[in-house]
Length: 267
Image (cartoon, rainbow, N blue to C red; front, side, top):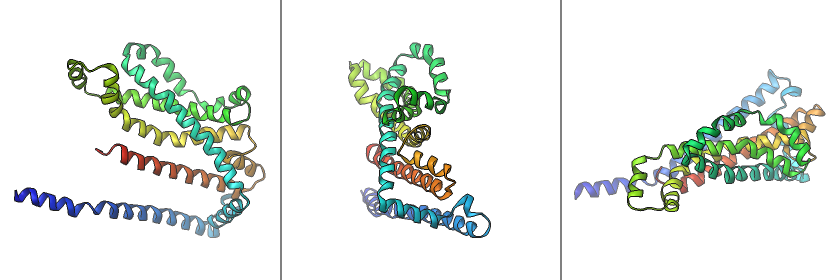
C-alpha cells in the first residue's frame, strides 16, 4: 500500500513537469532560430554581399510592407489552398489504396513495379503538362501537390499494416470479428501514427508541388512572388518568399504534432 501511495505521489509531482519541459524546448528552439538569424545578419554586414544574400532586417521590412498592403495574405492564402487541398486529397486517395493493397498482397506484388516507377518519376517534370492539361488555375497546382504526397500516404499505410501482429488478427477472426470491425478497431488504430507521419512529410512536399506549379504558370501565390522577384534580381523578395514558406511549413508541422499528441496518446 505504501509503495502504491509513493508511486501516486511521484506521478503527481512529475505531472506538471511536462508543460515546463515543453516551454523549455520551445525557448531552445526560438533561441536557435534567433542565433541563426543573428549570424546571417552579422555575415551580411561583414562577409556576404547583401545583394546576393539579403539580410534578415531587409526581409522583415519587406514582410511588413507586404502585410500592410495585403499582398502577403493573398499570396499565402493561394499557396495554402493549393498545398492543403493537394495534401488532403492525397490522404483521401492514398490511405484507402494503401489499406487495399496491404490486404491483397498478391495484387500488391503485381502492381508494385508500376507504383514504384510512378513514385520514382520526378513529378516536377510533369508541371508543364499539368499546366497544359488543367490550366493555370488552382486545380493544376492542387494536382501537382497531390502527386507529390499520394504515394507517401499509400506506402506508409501499407508498411503500417504489415507491422500488425498476425496473431492478433487471427485471434480477432477466431472471435468472429467482421471485416469492418477489424478495419475500425485494429487496422485504423495501427496505421494512425503512420498516417500522421505521412502528414508531417507531406506538408513540405505539398508546398513544393504548389510552388513548382506557381513557378511554371500563375499570377498569384508565394511561388509566383519568388519567381517574379528573381526575374527582377530582387534577392530580398526571393528570400522573403522562401522565409514565409519555411514559416508556413513549421507552423503546419507544429499543428500536426499537436494533433498527434492528442490522437495517439499512448505514445
